[in-house]
Figure 1 (tube, rainbow, N blue to C red):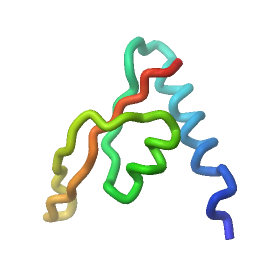
Figure 2 (figure 1 turned 180 degrees about the horizontal axis):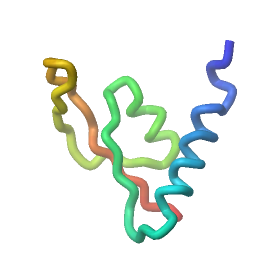
Figure 3 (figure 1 turned 45 degrees about the vertical axis):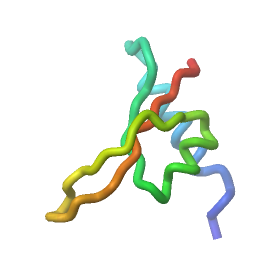
Length: 69
């Protein structure tokens, strides 16, 4: 019911604003593969692919970066 209402985008914008305080340079994050398009839509670009180990499982992730201020 709450999908595609902009809530995730608002949360991400707030988190990016918080990350910018006292920080110069790009903001980086690890995205799961299913969230990559969401972050791309928000202006993040893919830097590299990697893997993280969570709960005894290797999970593929994408390292993404946001340059805009």
